[in-house]
Image 1 (cartoon, rainbow, N blue to C red):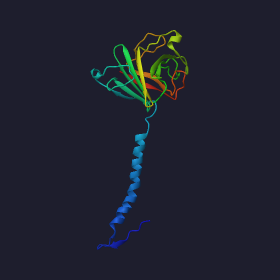
Image 2 (image 1 turned 45 degrees about the vertical axis):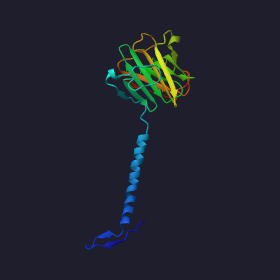
Image 3 (image 1 turned 90 degrees about the horizontal axis):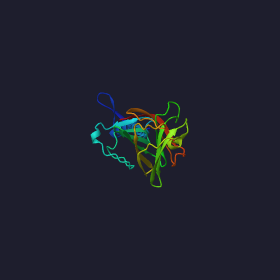
Length: 226
């Protein structure tokens, strides 16, 4: 406990006799509130964004776009849209009259994937998946079809075709980047159309390569394709 000695002023008001005691008392009273505010601010900065959200940024002038290259390197202005689907998974997209160009960056060292237009509340059913990654320094990608809530198959095993026209990928610092190109409308029975505007999606990633490996995170959402 801190005691403050007082003296009488001419008007009879008690005033502190030691200014240092006042400064000490004020510091004790104010410091806890400052520390609480600082801790709250730090916690807010360090908290992860909520899962399954589409935090979208856009480039409004298509003429400002850089050339798209399937090299696993996402450059400034290479895509018109980017959507942070969770703290560890970001989807990039751009289109022209015929094609959609997709980039995915995920905090993963195995496969990463995106599935388009799954049936509502049916899991993987009828979703059109692109799943890929980097193994032994080489990029790989699969075109898959959702058979039911949990299973999927290569399009080619079902009588369809692989509709991925170009792809590339890199893995560095615990992150994998996958880029690919396909037609907006492929005409394949085991593909879904990707539309300008809102698209329902599934996303997932794994710490192992090969589409038989289990995911370590997944989610659903909507993204806007320009």
